[in-house]
Length: 257
Ligand SMILES: [Zn+2]
Figure 1 (spheres, rainbow, N blue to C red):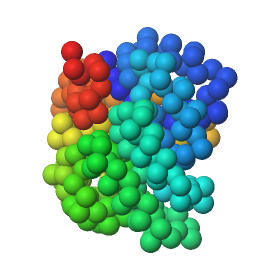
Figure 2: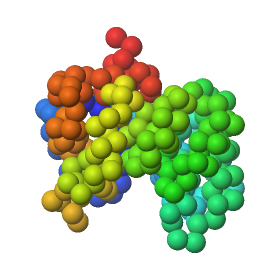
Figure 3: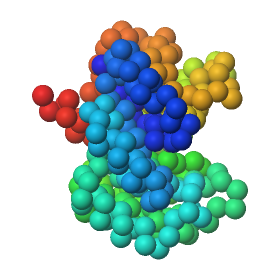
Figure 4: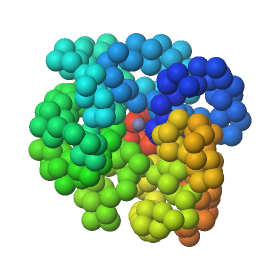
């Protein structure tokens, strides 16, 4: 059993063949797919997609790459929706200081408000962090959330260890399939297996050799194989442990059996 811990499966590019992809995922043993929220406008659509499915689970949050779309009312709506719809996490939230013309102050304010909601509802968080690990770690020390996943982690080993100490898993996706991604490949070959989560970030982050193509949650199988080639443990043990990591953190129903 495998989990895709980060997949934007609600995006329109999947509208035509979403059911077929889900059926193939089931055959491949991909039993759970986590679908994070990005903007308030899309939450209703996301909820209607995930609520009828035992395979799909939603997080709710306001993504730092879409600052122009967020409004002052979104945080109170988030508070409302979290209370009403019980998402498995607050996400996708974070800081993106890699973006051109980014506004550090407004991103930070929005992020802190969402961390506070995670504390209030005792939920983990799904983080998007680019060029901002020090700032994020500092804020996580201030707002003590119960943990979470740093999605598509590509920071330093030192950052990784600080996140682990704060109760976080580090997400690895298609990057691990790239021969030239030596730094990330070395890091994920050495991290404790209990700190790793598999993810695709589909439809983004295509695998090596698939540039320009739509990525799919089915890629989890290839990502697992690439990680396994770099590590001493068996593929089975890596699959089992990474699945357990995510299902325990997010309290997925299958982890409560
Ligand atoms: Zn994402």
